[in-house]
Length: 275
Image 1 (tube, rainbow, N blue to C red):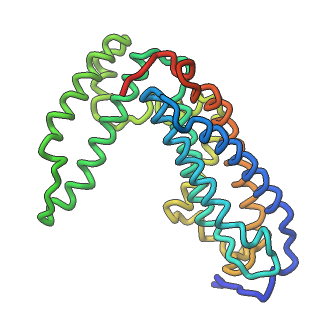
Image 2: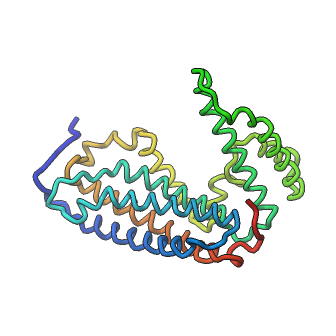
């Protein structure tokens, strides 16, 4: 199996699509940076601060994506690696961050609906932390987290029950939410629909890019067919990165449009402050 093909320069592969996609993502990311910078130093609600933090996380992913391609984009005569594997992984992370930003900043939320979402995030965080930290306690490592975990978790469960009842969720649905497996009230696809995104396109992007995150066979079984290079780039790598750059740019611009309004003090979150 042929994996590596290092060359003295980029051979006969038109990188114009790579450069075009790179510029599209760069421009979208700069628009996001402008909005993020504009919120610096201003008094925000807890929801705005959480949304802006995840927004900044998305921006960081975008910048990392571009840093992985910048050498080849700006100097195609060199044998720089176009690490499309990591670019795909970061793209999936960027889209996930974009979705969470949209979910947190959803403008139709009442205070109670936001608080309910917030409690689900708290519970998901508590359960996940318990799961991965518990593995180390078997090796004798102690964590202060477990000293208060049960009390904190019960408080969250009680709030989910009371808030859920007020929002007219059935007892069965509330019990399902209390399991702690939900990050989004209507699941990830429900969050994508709420964001106004094309569900089929979102499903494609999530499924395809997740193969690179988890090193599933889709990410490596056709390496020969795609002429994958570790030094320069094949036509597949150029076209793949163009697709990734433009897709991430589209999601980024969607979030930027939302955050321009959401990040305005007082009017961005009309529900007021909640930690």
